[in-house]
Length: 462
Image (cartoon, rainbow, N blue to C red; front, side):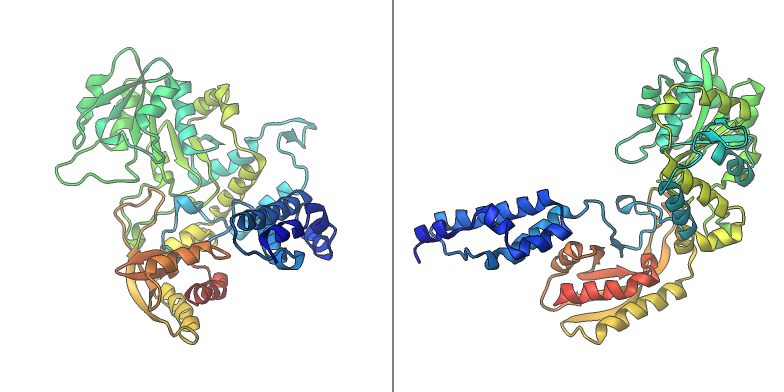
């Protein structure tokens, strides 16, 4: 058959749509995407034929491609992945994994109506922040608190409320970039506050803060260096000393804590991370931290501190622009409920459980993964080895967590090509490469993911 004749034999979109195959596609995919898949497939055949190439033009020969295209067009862009990197709070992979109780609560609230802004007892309009205030007080020990959509927004809102048009004193060693090119000086400029730098990059003393105080000073701000460390010839001022200085001159002190850890990590060999409750005991006036880092909850910015300051912040019109929705609020409330019992929180909150899990338990999981592979995979060298990983998300930058990994050295593929195949699979598996081997870190693999992971690896190696 000539190419010209084949072009004439190409079915129309309407012909394909009336075929028996289309009924099945329309039952699975939106009509719009079925039509688009049919058009794309026919157009590909038409272009091949016009170039003089041979191409099958029967409807039967196109069904697999149409089905695959319709499936791709209908799939969600945001999808679950298997995190095999070992990075627990992986910013690119969604940071904190939520607990079962949190997901259950979100499901209940999102599947129907709720008392988001309704006072059931009084039968009148209420405020959404009342749902989280009690738990914020009970868990942190602060007088009051609210939550917004992330920590950058929390810092912005506090600065805009307390220091717009006035000076905020910050150590030069704490002018950090918090990720995504958002920097403390930029956030401060956006808030309308005036940055007053004191000290040097590596050394700032109490007298630096005191000498900078003037009639235009509105706030003293301390920023926790959660995503980096300056070591060597260094000195900074403790939060206790800053609180004392603030009270002496009647200047409020704010602490941007960043990661927001509610569990004392010292018994686990992590001494550098401040605990929220301990900072509250120092008498800090206002404090902000993230909800989806070490806290292990949804993306949110938590603001806690003096009741009178929180009340002023709540009156800022900017609060409406950065407020959280009912899904975040329900997830945040359930997360803080887990912290009512700190010992249970370590087990129930996936982020804490993965961070604090004993290496021997990680090793057992790595061996299970390797065991499922060695039976069937003959074209790769597979072994379990000891390695180190990090918390991620800008938290605990100096703490290397001992872990165990499945090291895979394929014989017919490069490690990079294997990593690419895993990313292109269903579900995508995100791994890392080290010393010419693909590394599957068992610390961030859930038990229920092991069989799926093994199947993905076998398919990628085939």
